[in-house]
Image 1: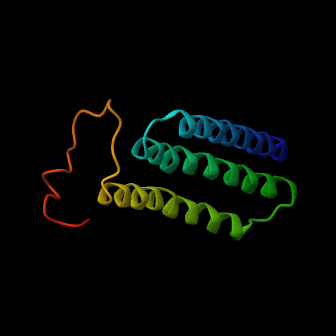
Image 2: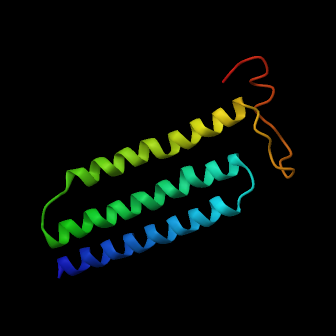
Length: 118
């Protein structure tokens, strides 16, 4: 009974992770500048990957009955490095003065980093 419930939860997490990853890919294609694309890649791709790995983790608990530490380390690694890497890419793009789209109205970092390299 509990095995089928955990397996069902694992399938739900894997399907949600796949859907979120697909929406992320669509967002990266459709968004206009690097800042918007980095936001989509940093947040939703991280969530999609974590859901996929957590679903796999639950599946191994339900079928084999053991806890896979590699999946836990993978979840923690993606949780830390996904948003951090997209933040650093967007910071490097801002530092190189990559242009915004025409829809961008406000540059809140302009006055803060006027004479500094970030």
